[in-house]
Amino acid sequence: MTTTTAAPTAPAPRWHEARAGRWRIASRVWQRHDTTGRRPVVLVHGLVISSAYLVPLAQHLAVRRTVHALDLPGFGRSRDPRPDRALDTRELGQALIDWLDARGLRDVALVANSYGNQIAAEVALRRPDLVGALVLLAPTMDPRARRYDEQLRRWRMEMKTQTGALQRLMVRDYLRAGLGRAIATFRHAMADAIEDKLPFLDVPALVVHGSEDPMVEDRWAREVADLLPDAQRRRLPGATHAINHEQPLQTARVVAAFLDDLDDTDGERRPTAGRPSPVRAA
Image (cartoon, rainbow, N blue to C red; front, side):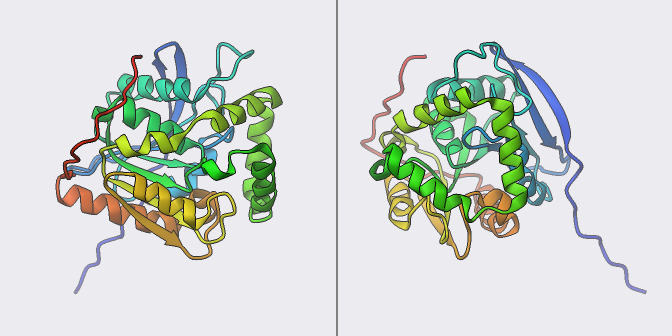
């Protein structure tokens, strides 16, 4: 008689709320207790939309490691106590730093989508002790497209690639955040030059982009990978911009393989000489 071992499954997510600096930040956590030697994953959402659209990817990654997906202040379940003013990229980065500190998380794998990559880059630049790996899914903002008319053109094209499920999530989250916050946050995203930070992020990184993503052209994805000191790049055929929601299994496979390889080698980093950090005072 032979026995078979059931394939591991993701645990059910639980909501958690933490006081982080001046914020109360809500997050989902898929907690595993058999993850010795595996970095926890922290998922960072994009412009205005909440962590809800990260759930499909989280469920795949949580089969092997603990996964957190937070709502940054002003979005989703995390309210901003100053509703009259949207946080800029640096402030959102500080909120994420405060949350990681409050949760006692170190050496995490930051996995971000779209504008979330600009926030993740801010964290990796200012607090490299918190970040053991960086995964940039469809990273913005292409400096050659840093114009309102070009962003509007690309956004209209990107909307045509979205499923109805994603569009419903976006409508809900945009209404919850409010038009003023959405517009102000978009302006902050436009003003943030991620390309100036990437060369100083001395952390193993993976850039993932889709062949059908009008927001992130192949040229820009290659440039992001080239600017990073230690980066790999994966182009997913047929994938779109919100690959964490629309192509979660395809995305999870490349992300998990990258993280597993890092874990197997204890996250060993290659030293990068001659790149002094431009870390700014807090």
